[in-house]
Amino acid sequence: MQILTDYLVIGSGLAGLSFALKVADNATVTIITKTEFNVTNTSLAQGGIASVTSQSDSFASHINDTLVAGAGLCDRAVVEKVVEYAPDLINNLLQWGTHFDTSQDGNFDLAREGGHSEFRVLHHKDNTGYEIQRALCEQVRKHPNITIIEHCFAIDLITQHHLGKLVKRHLTDIECYGVYALDTQNNSIITILSKITMLATGGAGHIYSNTTNPAVATGDGIAMVYRAKGILDNMEFVQFHPTALYNPKEQPSFLISEAMRGAGGILKDTSGNEFMYKYDERGSLAPRDIVARAIDSEMKIHGSDYVYLDCRHLSKETLLGHFPTIYNKCLSVSIDISQQMIPITPAAHYFCGGVKVNLDAQTSIHHLYAAGEVSCTGLHGANRLASNSLLEALAYADFAAKHAQQKIQTIEFAQNIPDWDDKGTTRPEEMILITQSVKEVQQILSHYVGIVRSEMRLKRAFNRLWTIYMETEELYKQSKLSPRLCELRNLIQVGYLVIKAANARKKSIGLHYMVSYE
Image (cartoon, rainbow, N blue to C red; front, side, top):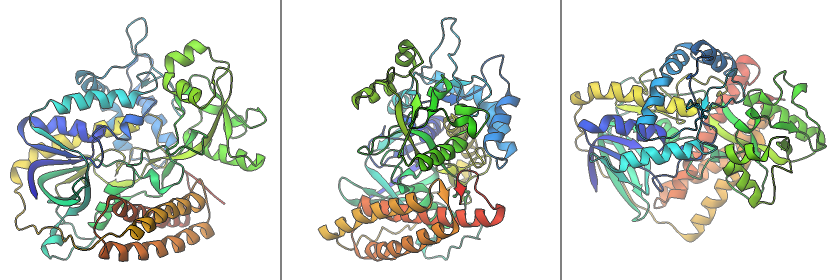
């Protein structure tokens, strides 16, 4: 089966949907998503979206906070462009029907989170991402030029390689013609040809055992670009959110929003003592990397698997009014946060690195754009400032849309693209091996490439991952494709890239800003 579309969007989060809406009026757009349309990282974002909207705030302040959090490794030109463009992007969301909380005077009810010097985070209670996803899904579903294909798993980008030409990473003329995708309901391969492809596949949190990301976050877009010989950047910068609910029986981990610390929540050790001022003068409102390392240190000191977030001094009215999702989730596991402290632990949360893009969201592969967590824009540096992720996704989708609309008329559909070679079989014992290998990859990354790293740990991780890689590549050649096999292959490749980049970063600067080296 072959599909032709002017624009192909891979992923249905904020970056993909906002891009689709901005290019659809004069072209055909096809959105593919590997599960349901609304299963995205965007829908799980709790805290909000950062933007200067009050007179007491300034672009200079937001820019500085972003640069400080990024440990000096942000691209200043990117930071300035995104921050100064943010208010216009907020207006886009409002026009699409997104609702943000307001105070009695009608102004935005702005929150403050770790690393921010001002109250500038717009939110919808503690489920901002869900509200944004709802609004955009409604707009996309009713647009006549947009087609949505669910349960459609992108396998590989189509480039000159599929026409029998040699493609190397140093070449500057690689072109993307679309993707091969697996229809997971019919177990058949679809060839989707496009003039422009937007990669908005999200992050790769599931290379770790403990993550706040939904199950779909397996690094598919990053791995596809790597295989297509595209350029990646800053893969070592994995952000661990310091406060995920400690509940070993649950996967993914439930996020306890940073906004709770912004509202006055205090981190305490298992003896009930506040500890953050030992590590940073900002206390519990220090940036995420500092807080995550501090919590890791405290857990080792006390031999515990968690620490506490204490919100008992906040009024129940505040907790229910601003954090109803968190309140009810904790209550479901017998924790009344108005009377009990919340057990929390760090969890893999966000990839600051990814597919390298320029200020127009262009990747190193022609006709291929990337936006959202899959991309590396230079905005975050070594550590993403809280609530800058939704802003970045929205901004780069807009930059990409403006650039793509200027060039699409000059692009023709590729010709003579071969069908995917769909040979092989899948046996029950192979599926068991695949499932076990996924768990092994997650354990390797969690144990050796987590918040604390060392040269010995990285070497051990690489050696163990290599064995699984060789087994998986052999299985991939022999077996009929399955979603889990594709995900396993992507997880291994992203894990390898994180290890490789971490080794390089350690040697070049002697330390890691997002994590600690022993």
